[in-house]
Length: 155
Image 1 (cartoon, rainbow, N blue to C red):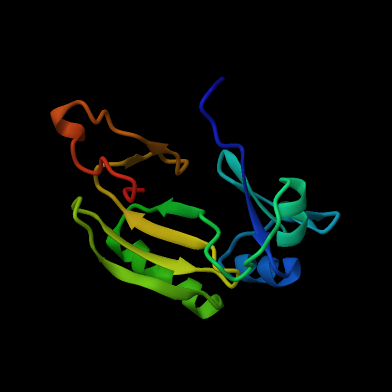
Image 2: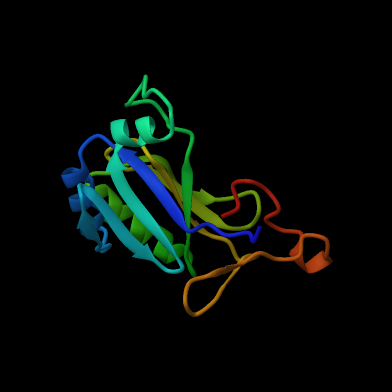
């Protein structure tokens, strides 16, 4: 099987509210049968009812306000972009859960939670190259030049 992420689905309490939030961040999508599909580079972000998502996965959604175990990362090209995106997110209704600061790997990152509690890390990691189209190139962690950033929070 090829390594690929095609969709990231967020189970949300209110699809309309979630769509409005992401539109305020500058993201636009299409709604089909109470599900919003947002093209995000080579993948899609999907906003769908938390209850329906849980049922579809064969799970019971027992704690809708609790952390759902998903952290999404958005890498950017500069520290200034980290600050700008966190500010836009806050104005759109996000809660900043970790203010932007220098990271142990020599980058700069902060985290916000959207209105449904989904965590987004906004990160500038000089060890992770971004192509013109925004796609990420994972460095070779086995080489001397790729040693920085070899950890989970290094998005």
